[in-house]
Image (cartoon, rainbow, N blue to C red):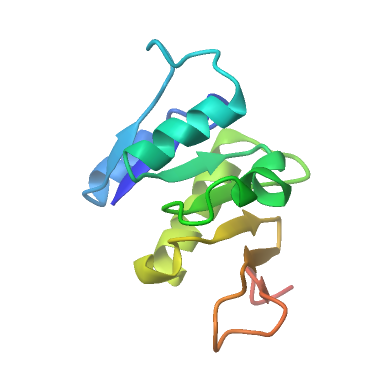
Amino acid sequence: MKFFFDENFPKAATVVLDSLGHQYFDPRGTEFEGNPDEALLVEAHRIDAVFLTTDRDFFHTLRHEFPDHAGIIVIALKKPNRQAIIDRLIWLLENVDEDHLRGRAFQLRDRTWLARPPIPDLTDSGEQNVDPNA
């Protein structure tokens, strides 16, 4: 699978993606650095990559720009830090089938997650607990 990093996504996630055999593109240090969100999503769409970000706008509004996108993963934590963001990414990769990413936006919160559109057979609302102790 291919992933596209938003500029706010921790570079340390590259280690996880490498270890799982995934490809990724990080716009930092390229001609895409500093481009508006829409331009980054255009490029992610062009290379058919799942977009990784901590920017909630991608979940609420920008996901509608390209309904056939490869997937958008938004990690929206109350107190975000590099390790917590990476832990949520790992959780998603271990628990959501790759086939369910295309055309969906995911918002991973501290203890819950949302998928829009919802994933069939999981829940009508698209919301699930991340932490079984929640």
